[in-house]
Length: 315
Image (cartoon, rainbow, N blue to C red; front, side, top):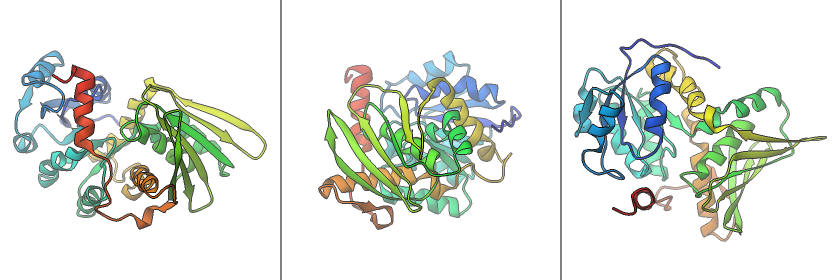
């Protein structure tokens, strides 16, 4: 796995401190040679003053209450958008894109087609944007892909908690294992609280996902080959470093190409949107290329309110 050390001049601005990711990523970023220079928190989860407390505890020199001011600061070359409300991702990224700064968008990248397309428009215009689920880059997933030249007969994969914020990890895991080209999705029911999703690839690959259920589960996959069966489980403790080692060289300019092209990167999000539309259409197959703007998607604001309530008791 590629690891490119950066000089301390490559500064990071953390945007929104909602989840455990900002705290967990800081030591990895520093170990890879980056400087965490600034923080901003919009208050989706935490009360006023939390950003200053977080900065003091983590030796981060600058705290901003304006994204525009953070984007203009010379110490920030890359913004990492951690908002648990994915409906905020586009607006959080916009000031940095306008200033020519790179952006890492934490998972899920967006919850509707219009915003996914706007990120694409920015990339087509020259912006450096990457992100998504760490499961695509999990060492176990990458090793499977490298040693499996022939598509398996079937993959059964999943994870727990919820159907999109966490469920996107299962979509990304099978996307990393089977490669690009997800063609269609079908919602085939809810069993014991688990959403059952079928995915098909243009080259004949297929996967079945079991996601949600409220409780945490490991990130797992059972793979059916022509003459064997194997089980994969991604180790949580290696996921974040694997993601950052792959993405940060591109965002910093040390690598000229992203580890995953954007059209491939967002296939998990598009597949999840297709699965949701399939559920609304009584389980019909929905092709990713037939998705249209305005068909609903996933409500990030509602998730953000629920996330706050789960973390702070609704305070």
